[in-house]
Amino acid sequence: MGLFSGKKGMILGVANDYSIAWSITEKLAAEGAELGFTHLPGEKMERRVRKAIDPIGPKLLVPCDVQKDEDIAAAFAKAKETFGTLDFVLHSIAFAPIEDLKAPFVRASRDGFKLAMDISVYSLVSVARHAAELMPNGGSIVTMTYYGGEKVVPGYNLMGVCKAALDASVKYLAYDLGPKNIRVNAVSAGPVKTLAASAVGDFDKLSGLYEAIAPMQRNVTREEVGSSGMFLLSDLARGISGEILHVDCGYHAMGSPGHAFEKALEQQAAD
Ligand code: NAD
Image (cartoon, rainbow, N blue to C red):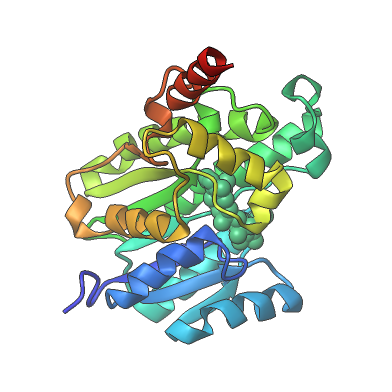
């Protein structure tokens, strides 16, 4: 018996086997979950997602552009047909136009801001509303966030502001859905090399920052992010809602460069 034996869930956000959604999927599948997936509309996207998810025998793969309420409604209607009810939903989706993402936040365009907020934040609200209809016995909804929504992380720019709104949405959704025994949480992951991360900036530089500053003096692994996502989706976390769970080797706890500063001081003394 696995932790997820007899449990059914939808996963939104696998693009390929580098996706964080895939790292969480692998853990869920190993614990016996029955899983349905969405892909961005289009044959090429469908093929790419199917290739990633085939090894775990998905029960459902449906197109869904989260900018369209009708796509979200259709995806959850299919989930109802396939599963009847749902126990959990993973939302692992973000997007900003590259020119707005790369620009200092002060230069973000109005259209880029709207689009990034729509896909990266509002989609969680719409997904949670549709998911809740299929969770008569309660359930767990998890999204993916980043520390750049709490504090300035140079280079994260517009997406940092989206994550701040996403974090607040997690808390308001947790409040609204709590009476139905539906929990809403986020995993705040340290940097993981994925398609989306490559748009944000120099991954090695960001990962190096974690090695220098995080209490554990290393960056997180994708496997660790997968386990934590699975944990929040599981009954082990049944008392947790409205939480932003940092899975970042402790980086978020630091208020100074810590070990990196001490090393710099030692170097100065030696010179
Ligand atoms: P990814 O590129 O693998 O996943 C992003 C997903 O968003 C893709 O599956 C893509 O198809 C989907 N998407 C984009 N626009 C969409 C739309 N209109 N409709 C439906 N789906 C759409 O990258 P990832 O890093 O796995 O990102 C997943 C989540 O994790 C994002 O919210 C990201 O901000 C967050 N996150 C990533 C990191 C990291 O370092 N990679 C760290 C913290 C948080």
